[in-house]
Length: 242
Image: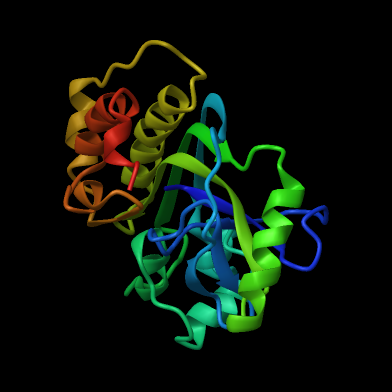
């Protein structure tokens, strides 16, 4: 699961709030307490068929630490302010990509952050608002729910934080390599090649820390391993349908 869209239970026609999913138990119809940022169970309702849209949308961004040292890492991966506060106050657990809050190193000019996301599809409620409202009226008196999950994006979310050596000439060479990865993963080019010098320069990376909504990805140790796994993961949606 990549992200969830939640709407206020008082008015299902109000604007959706889109949030990065950090609790993978959420499903369509899950009730949500926006004050505590917690799931409260699932609305007891069945639909003949949910609405599904396929996107196959990819985005890969490479950022330098010196441009982001004053930004919270949770903000960097688009976790909204209210959820960031809940995570910082330990009101909700840090799962999946939200574990980035525990990154142990200082973000500085020798830090590089690669953020890759792939949206496979979005699953949402069918257009049966009245049916949903009827069920909500009977449930809300028993819970503190303020919102309901009305759609879910399924896909891949990966953040790789790299600490480079404090040697400007080596950093410049590593930046060239990282840009090759970014361009290919973002779909800007169809050809990917590393030279022998690229491989030798890559070995100078001091530390690689990986966060993802897919547990198997976090067990990997290098960007290159992830690079080869992404193509396989994109064709196997069972890896992120949980």
